[in-house]
Length: 203
Image: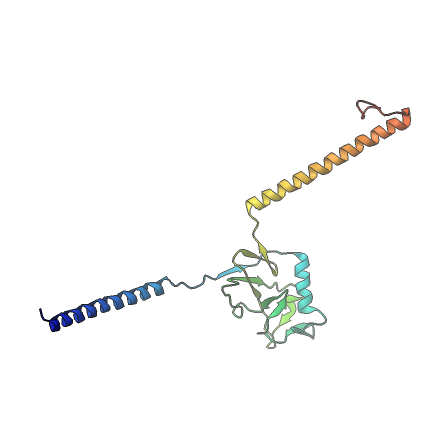
């Protein structure tokens, strides 16, 4: 075989190997793209939350220094429907369509407005229509409670709290019993002038 033929064969082999390599790369790229997934967002309805937190949220919306609503003719008129209510560094919207879940806060919490509510039941848009819900975002591990995000309490967490409460109660009970015993012993000393060596509860 001449050197010229060897060069031609070598060139053909390199070309075939290069094509296979590019094919593998493109296949790997397709495999990578198929593994890409979109974030999973969840919509939940809010449960009853803390009375204190609810009161603070109401003060933020309807307080004297509020810029979210204007009281006029017995109604609370929303100044800017698209402007979120900022409470405790969290954004609240008058419509769930305005609240966009993301990877940080994938849970959309929806708190339905009771038309009979003395404050939120009197909130109106400028066109005299009413909002029906307030929406905000929470982390994936949280659940919606009132106008707040609360953490799920697991069985083991509840059991641990119960054991701590039992331990504290036992310690307090022992101290109370000992204090009572010493009090009885002091009464015995006052009555007889000397402490009893045995059975301090008996006078």
